[in-house]
Length: 354
Image (tube, rainbow, N blue to C red):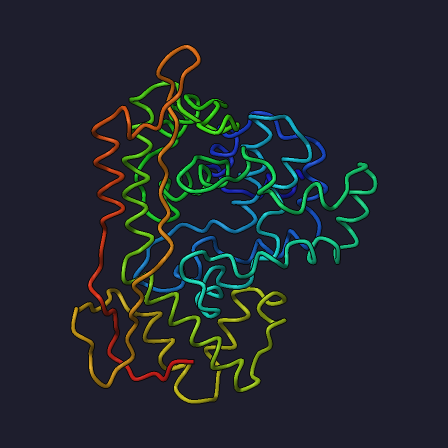
């Protein structure tokens, strides 16, 4: 545990300390397992990190998973829930949700989650630790069982909270600093939603509005054409190479992103390597409502909309969705939901889709 945390950048250490002043002792053993450590080589933002169109800080799937676990621990002090949060991305392949694009799962982006249990069970190190701690696999292999860890959009969960905080800290775009993150985080508590279920929510409307404002900006950035193009292009590269037996499905889960990129850049088939280089060095995307002729383009209408409409305290024991009590929050959320891009995104190269 000390090795992982000691090697973090100072700003990430500070961020983690905000999420939980205490790091539970048991967590380090699970972080150090090979199955978790492989997430260290996967960037959180689905491969887009590797193009000059983006200016993202390095933040791995392991960092995100640890941060989610720290949030759950901070609010619940429950070991099983904390481990479920730690393991929720353990089956993530290279380029993350890009592989969902390859599988045609644009709206839910959950096509790889079914491998979570298998990945845990196949890790002898994790299974040994679970036996030591008297925990059954079915108690930690699906964080959907724990509403503080995960719940349905647009509710606020630890997972949704974490990627909103870190993405706004510079993983996607620098929208707030550590002081602002701390101010927001300290305003969050466990509340009861419309179904009587536990859910994270805000004590004060002003903090909920501030959170929703940045969340809504991020929601639109997630669906920018350059992001849709990049994820689909990487998915098509992977599919073409798999169809030609240059890589296997197992490689998606075995290799690091650096190793997969080396395979793409050295691919001898078609013009995969050449097109990848052009994407990698591109600084902007081309967009139009009219389909371009003779060049590779991406047209995706239905894509997962990530947004949050959190609870906020309105009386001693009463809570409401912030959009029901704040005109500003309602406008921000509606703006995010209405966001549309031009129909086609493209770069100036020919590339046959996978």
